[in-house]
Length: 355
Image (tube, rainbow, N blue to C red; front, side):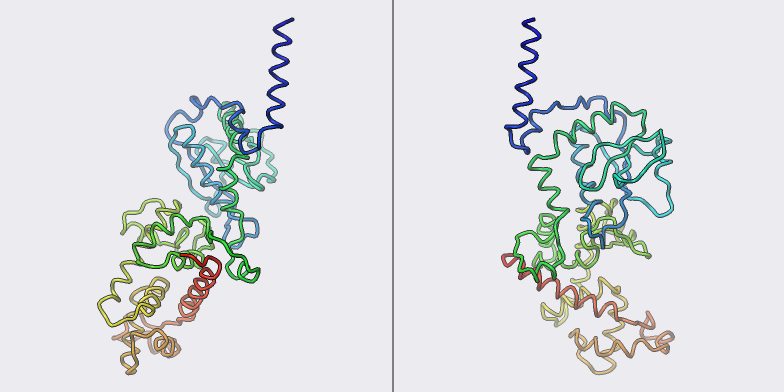
């Protein structure tokens, strides 16, 4: 009888603690998962299948889950390989046959598949899906999520990826903040390679991807800075989904482009303009623009002079011009690209006045 009373007393104390202790600290008192058996062999293979977040009104789901998966893998001491879904691929089949371990999807997706189970929701929208026979792994994931959700680290992660980052909406509200992206620390760290204000690099990333790691273009450009696979390979980057690796590849490429304009008589402002234009259109295109501007006896170290001659470069006759190697150049996208980035940068400077 004494043992029963003692056990009942312990249960009451634990329940009381859960009501008294702040939510962010409760994880310290919750049962920890025995992760020694979870995903013990090799690395965890994960696919994030949440759709593009570039124009999403519901936050950066892929970026959030990418960081959360990394956090979980670190907690259990396991390697992890994360990819994003490709169009036309059936990842439920891949999960069912064991080709992948975890599939991240919208939690409300209805699945008529007895071979697949889902975890508790990891955020407002998503859950992690596993094979139904992986009971130990599902238990470990749910126990870890129970202990992590509500902590300061979790809340900070959620706020990073579910905040409003549109610079013009924030500016219209008069919203001032020291945070202008989910990746401020990485952007600050790598902007030094360019010698730029970090807010300018943040503006480029916003224009390229809206801070969505799973953005891709029809040409194969990938991730935060829309880096082409060939460009990544040139700089020794192997994982363009990884935010830091993508930013490293992008900033190294920008630095190399900028160096080409350092030996001539460019002002700092013009060097940035031409670097941005080259990043968007390609170096050969902008070289053609400068050659053509020189042929028109215009100052080819000033971007506004280049803008003047671009309409003439849209003519079909440029397709067969021996001097201008890339032929016709519509150029509208590049003109708008440079202008938009500078507008975003100026907005970021008002939102976050202290560099």
